[in-house]
Amino acid sequence: MPKTRPRPLSRSDDGKWLGGVCAGLGRGRGIAVALIRIAFVAVALIGGLGILAYLACWLIIPHEDEQPGDPASRWIVVLAQVSAACLGIAVLAVLGAAATLFGLGWIVAVLAAGALLGVLMAWPRLGPAWALLPIAALIVPAVAVAGSGMRLSPQVANTSFAPAALRATSEVTYRSGLGKMLVDLRHTELPAQGVVHLRIEGGVRRTIIALPASRCVPIALSYHVRPFVAQLAAQLTGRAEAYSGIVVFGDVQPGLSGAHGDLYPGRGPVLSIDFTSAGGSLFVRDYPNSVDPDVHPDWPGYRVFPEQRPDTAGVPKRAARRLIRAWRVRRRAEVRSQRLVDSLMPGPCALRGARQ
Image (cartoon, rainbow, N blue to C red):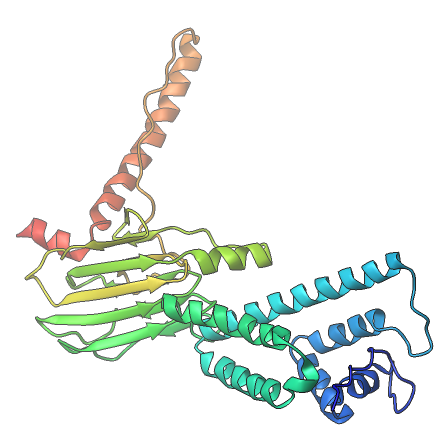
């Protein structure tokens, strides 16, 4: 039997509910109208995309009573169709990558498998491989994200962890997503010796590991920062948290990947930290119980450099004396701050080593 060409798409008044889009699509492609309506409603639940898709179809698909327009109008329709298709593919790609990034890749796989099954069942009516393009747009970015190893916890709020105890040779993992994370070990029971493994999967904002100020805890750190997700989020939202780097007892570590050797090994349990993040900073140091690390992550403050003696050449003697007196007052305060910060910055391991 000769193959019958599909009817041209048009919005139908027969059985329409709103603009006749679903009725026209069902009639033109031989698909049950109820299934098309269910699909539009389901997609509408994803940020209202179904509503935008319906409006686009209502604008692009002509009414069954309309006559074909001139070539210019046809080019406008084609341009609108191409733009809508590109936008839809981009949205699917972003949704697939975001779902995989937050550990929901299995949902992407289920949706893609269902869509593929639907395409295979309706292949004669849907036409050529164009029907597979949305599935590819959903799967390819998801596979790329999964292969990169990037993963965020599906949470927005700030998180705080304060384990009661950590044992030698144990390995604990903490994850964060779009919020800040605090791992507070100031009151955690730690072993006398040995190695405690801590795996931190940070998000796009900072992570703080608060150590006790009254006990030496040597640190062995390896870090790897992938800033792409944080940069993408900053571009999309117009807001970004300043990346402060990897800061260990006030010292900023170089680069986005590297390692920091054991600090003062043999003086206590070594805390081995394996840190990865999607662009978030890391602060590791001791904090007194009276200090909130989330409010003062840079405690005890930035290093102080006392002001040099002002140049009084050409200044009248009385004004020069006032200038020097004011400078001496400022300098005494700055020297006190410098000594305090310099004494606290290295942490309790360095203070204990100095006493020994």
